[in-house]
Length: 117
Image 1 (cartoon, rainbow, N blue to C red):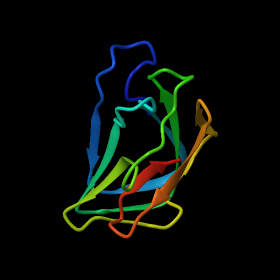
Image 2 (spheres, helix red, strand yellow):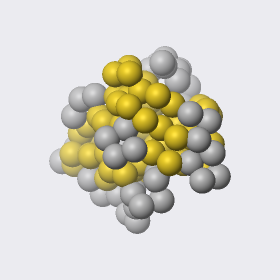
Image 3 (cartoon, helix red, strand yellow):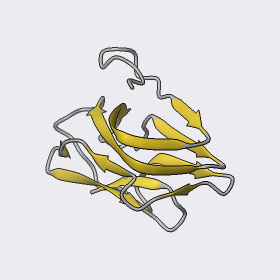
């Protein structure tokens, strides 16, 4: 699944579903790692995310200029209305780096998933 082509204007999108059963597929998403901390988002609304889905991120910001994330990080999966996400439901498909920063994908107690450096 592809949110948008890499050379499209930088408008971030949300994809909403009630349930996602990962079967090893990849969702391509865009993120800005140079300070605005914005990205495409996958929204799980009231259901659950199970299995394994790979997330592939393209940095649409200045690739030489990463910044430290603050708070929980950059939310990329938003579990809403009681939705749940299994531990391991999402993983980075490849390393994500900008400038001197390496980013990891983390699940929090709120069931949301965040990019953090």
